[in-house]
Amino acid sequence: MGLRTPLYDTHVAAGARVVDFGGWDMPVNYGSQIEEHHAVRRDAGMFDVSHMCVVDLRGPRVREFLRRLLANDVARLTQPGKALYSCMLREHGGVIDDLIVYFMNDEWFRMVVNAGTRDKDLEWIRAHAGGYQVAVEPRLDLAMIAVQGPNGRLKASGVIDPALAAGALELGAFFGLSADPWFVARTGYTGEDGWEIMLPVDKAPEYWQRFKAAGIAQCGLGARDTLRLEAGMNLYGNDMDETVSPLVSGLGWTLAWEPQDRDFIGRGALAVEKASGATHKLVGLLVEERAVLRSHQKVIVAAVGEGEVTSGTFSPTLERSIGLARVPAQTGERCEVEIRGRLISARVVRPPFVRNGKATIAL
Amino acid sequence: MSNVPADLHYLKSHEWARLEADGTITIGISDHAQQALGDLVFVEAPEAGRRVKAGEACAVVESVKAASDVYSPFSGEVVAGNAALGGQPELINSDPYGAGWIMRIRPEDKAQFAAMLDAKAYEAALAAEIH
Image (cartoon, rainbow over all chains, first blue to last red; front, top):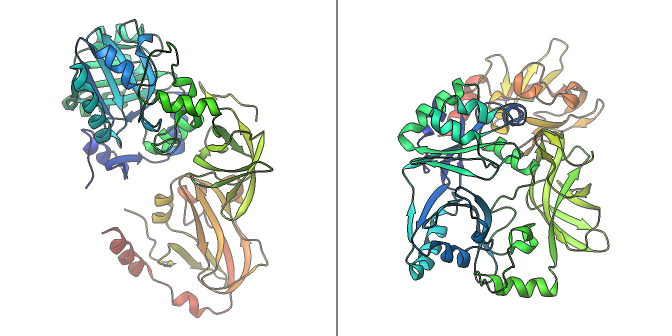
């Protein structure tokens, strides 16, 4: 038996197919994952993301601490509720996790980290927090439901507390609103508009049913993966891990090099890698044939070398296979992928593939 | 739970087979198999005229999650592959024993059909697999 969120019984009662995900028993679909995917692109769908870990960091030196701990710079967060996507690195530049951090007030930041890396992340954060007298509090009293899709916010607003809803509807993208213990953020992992809603664990089953009654489709991890890949979003463990740096993972844009005297953990190693030129890059791949890209397939780049597919799937919106791959830096516009013993031609594209319901690449 | 029609024969690898009036045998994959695979996106059914051996992989079903070979339960000649699956692979999910049939084979030896699992034996095999 794996770990279970407060919504486990709800998912089982709804007929979900449950699978192991990083040690958690999670719903992969409630029927057709392709229909769940379309519901998010066209209307509204929701995901139980309570397995992810909310961590509150408090203390007078919390901002200083995070400017050391994270590769992106929380100095960029000046308005309460503003969020930032960042990697957390080892000294050698390898990625421990990717996460979102919210500025709540001058003595309180909130992070959301991945489920599979929770223990490792907390150990690392705690090891470094002591030196700044920052208190580290995992919020095990909170569940999280992500409502995504063009009609998601409107449908959810009719369900949650009216005062919270009114404030939440005013939120710009990548901002959150706290009404402790509730927290609503206009963030997501699908490439559609929406809210990620944190709520008390004992309220989660009731609100899941109320969201469902409001016409928000139940969606599992299968749809979550096809949506995030269409949106060009990395998945920790597939597209990056501790053996690679953000520079070869399509995450160079999350590194804040200025100001030059901000010595975040991993900066030194990254600077060396950057100076000599990163040997690889993460690219998007699009396949026109009737074949599906999957992790670990070999990529062959004529006259250049070899690479590897890091994530692959079938895109329900584009109706063909898409993926992300780590390839030699000089890779051009085409490559070949070894799929089930055959060499399949693929087009190299710059992600995302889909945003706000529409293809962002020429088909 | 999955649907296991009583009048069909099965393999442990989740193929089903139905003996037709004209002596050919229609083959597909079971309800259990389509549930496990999830939404199907590509199906390669064999072409008419192809000779197959018992145990030979002669079709491929690919879902969002994974690709899977479909094995012929017997030796014989392929009479037809289900052309509808090219444009509508999801027929296997919605109607695995009907419109989602994959291929039709004229067997060399009808005894091989009798040697397959009956519905009760397949259900027992499923129960053993799950627990």
